Length: 115
Image (tube, rainbow, N blue to C red; front, side, top):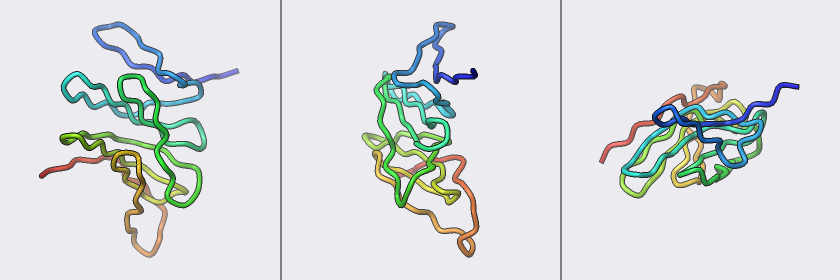
C-alpha cells in the first residue's frame, strides 16, 4: 500500500506535518519565524499548514480542491490552486473563484502579492 505523508525539512531535520497522511505539500513560504506549507489531501481537500498546525482551505462551491502555492504579506496568508478543475485563490483560508476563458478548466499554480 502506498501512503503519502506530507513532510518538511529544515537543515536536514525532517518534520512530519500534523494530519499529513495521504497529503502532499507543494509550496513553502517562511515569514519571520512562521513556516507555511500549501498542499492537499489526496483527491479532495486543499490544506495549509502554519507552524505544523493544519487548516483546511474552504471550498468555494464543492470538493476536489488542492493548493499549489502559498505567499504571506503582513498578516494575510494567500494560497492558490484549484477546485473542481477551476482556478482558486484563498486569502486567510477563504476561497474565491478566479475567472477563466469561457469556464475552461485550469488551476492557479503560483501566487505573489504586492501592496
